[in-house]
Image (cartoon, rainbow, N blue to C red):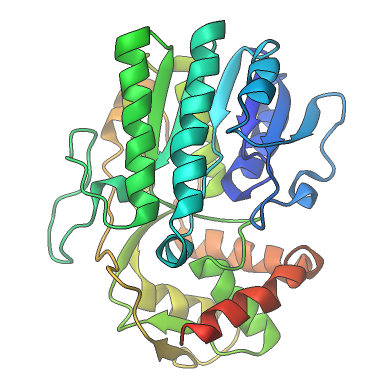
Length: 332
């Protein structure tokens, strides 16, 4: 699998994966990215041109996808509309990219016999009660609650059907919430960090009791590469790093790490249908494939992420004003 096609490779998690592949393998990577607002060519800056090729295009374009598949050994499919707030505002792009785009890639992989790995989210499982000791596993029933998570659930089911019906050589991973470099400022952690840098008070939905299971993007990348190399065809693997934190604690930790009072934030109108808690049981991935997370200290990983945003303001500054205008109009 020396030639990888990485869809959405100029986005947050995809670009981190491309950096990881270049650093840890000899693979050549073709990045296919539509460069919507969430994609940024600068996220791939500094990578060797001899090993990383960028193609500007849409995963829902059958002719382009088929052409790229002719020189591809494996596809790693990150491309997705992924922001819950945007899906509540306008669901249609989520159907076009997450459903039709995934279908287009699967059909091309089917024609060319290409290995396929589909990157998904734990949000397809819905949520858990705050006091529930359970965690999501590969057998947890799907129960999505937003246009984003429902279209990701739909794309997962397409992959499963193409494996069973057509013999596509595919695996799936469902990961918990990522943090780290190159994440768009609309997302929870970078929004709060860049607010503090700009002298704006962080914003917390509702009471901030909602729990997310955080994993550093580098750990997600290493897990995906492990599954691509050693995962069993047709299997789903959950990726998590035992990083459960509620949103209130995360905001207060960001403020503390940035030298601000831990109560210097504002409560804002809660998101509609806001999931309560996500929690991942990644035992299958660890036991079968021997994967382990490296960023086990959330505070240390968060501190490094803060440092990255402080030193890369040119990367995120252009998107910040538009993001805050969007949230201001929603009272958030």
